[in-house]
Length: 338
Image (spheres, rainbow, N blue to C red):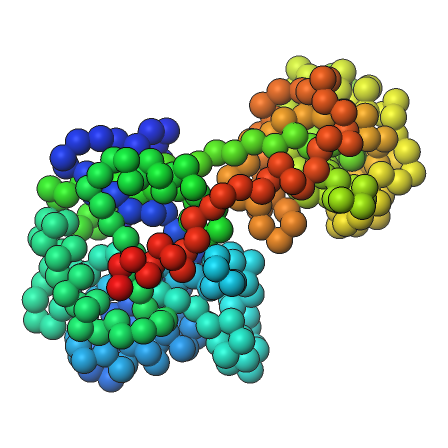
């Protein structure tokens, strides 16, 4: 069951709401002594999360199919960076991480329970069956029942407090059976956030515009409390029309060093001609407000979008403090479902 991205939370009696977790989607099935874990792309996840597969074998239920999300706790929140580290080619490393950073399975749908086929039942029937299944089988971590509500205000609260392991809200049609291979039964709404960042460098593109090389992406920076400028991500949302003039402005302030803290990968180069690991440092003069969805591990996880230039902001005002927010604490949220 896939989700369609929308801008607003739908309202009405036909919808059930859930937090949108920032993890790996996973179908988990058991047939007697065998367990199967499959990602959205069809990848076998048992190899990378053996502790989840083993825990599933302890359930009283011998045959079942669950739909849920794999996450890795980090204190009171979930860490996507730690989750990514679990995908490792070495079996010895996988076993080590399974002990050091064990995963949690957040269940939000039940497709089969014993001989009872639930996938073709409407969502309220599946949810009631899932809650009964969880009460019987989910004695403790690492399996948890993901919260659900029919109240729009609850969904709005989840969206507003996104962060720390949740990145928005999910809305599911209550009148439909489980939707295989389409996005008709589920919508996702992500919280888009903004931040003011310093431009600390740029990379040239391989394609020329009007016969000249131009900037293809901007390297973004934020200051820490020691006044160190750290590279935190990039934006490539530049139009061909603005690239020549912007490149002129950036080349005028090119320098030998810019990021005094964490730097982009690859050596800086004032004469780079390819969009490669090389980059051109610039003096911290320009500030842009960007939109982003995730900030983890000291970086914006995905590319960002420029909302506007901020000539009214001083570069020194662009710091990590602005990224701090009151986020959902997954541990507290999940305790309410036990």
